[in-house]
Image (cartoon, rainbow, N blue to C red; front, top):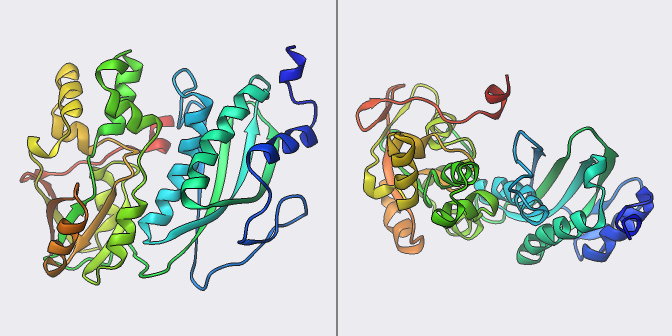
Length: 321
């Protein structure tokens, strides 16, 4: 029975993949199985890649294969949304160690991926497969900039800074998982394992001519704000307790940390962070229920949080050095 759960060859694995993720789509001229896929690209093609590595980006002691598949694709979709685009399709390469080369594991993994594929009408064009000492997922995604493409560092002095949801929830969920407090922090745990991706919010933002820049918050607000604002400009951010989710307040209290700094340093929130001329703010407020106006772009290279100098957020690379 144990042997039936193991893959016996690469061909066996690929046939198993085809059962869960069909090798056909209206956007594909030629799908998986040849040296290359052939796709029908839009006029303005957006492309992004993300690595998702065991013990760096996720811990399989609390990530189920389903959540792992879901999040590995979700973080890529978020990059397309952050440019104001619509996701279309992706390539996926897998680094598999022997302990994960099981049908049960990949059945759940593919179901997590397929949930997002069905939701956003995506196709899997191809990829690669190899054994490795660690488990990892490498996804390259592409999308269509249908309305307006957004860039970083295009803000102007006086623009207001906004986020499309709560910050710090994913970090809160990570700490809750590590401390075994899952039941008390259900919203934040799910934000870490199965993040909401703000594609619909991006669609709304893309129709607003007053938005000047946009990105997603993957490394924490306090780090990503530096990446958003143009050189020789700065940001004056104002956050209060009322802007922070209750679960983040609760975990910060347990950890004896300042809740605003805890939230601002948290990575993997995947809310959208942007700047907008004041003329377009009412449109955003009317159409995005969870939007928060958190500050203003200033005409000097100074970054402040509630009047104090701002320090950075999370960095996967530095954490591993």
